[in-house]
View 1 (cartoon, rainbow, N blue to C red):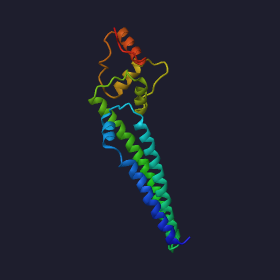
View 2: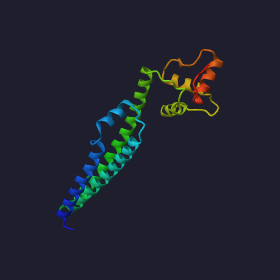
View 3: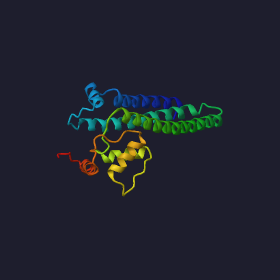
View 4: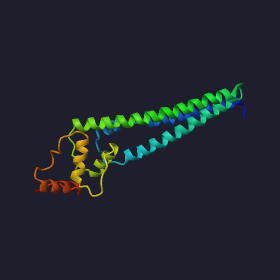
Length: 192
């Protein structure tokens, strides 16, 4: 294949890839974006359908962009005189990208924990109302959950780790507290 043909085909693939990426990000209905931002439940499957479509468009866009850039590289490769140096530089770029990704992943986990801790300090949230989520929060912070541990004990362990006061939603008497925790874990309200 002629190198200039590969470059032109690669550029065409890049345009298609950019369209798919832009369509998945930019071309969303403002009403839908506002509903997602404010957490309004519309009771419709359109959000799920749109999410799946957006995800597919991102993958298609990525594949077209990658293919287009590779075709451009193939088209330009034959014109390069010192190919070994270029390979060495490209390898260095890929290694640097992996290192940046590792540092970014570590930073994002630390930041996420910091934001979670800050959120719980400034917003009252009942850890007993959704025990699965409480366990997930505990895992994020590395708080172990023992199989024989009560819901109340684990919730208090998470609250202590986050440096939060004792759960105000629990009654003061131990037997009433246990009933409240069991009722919350079973998804029932306190009707007593």
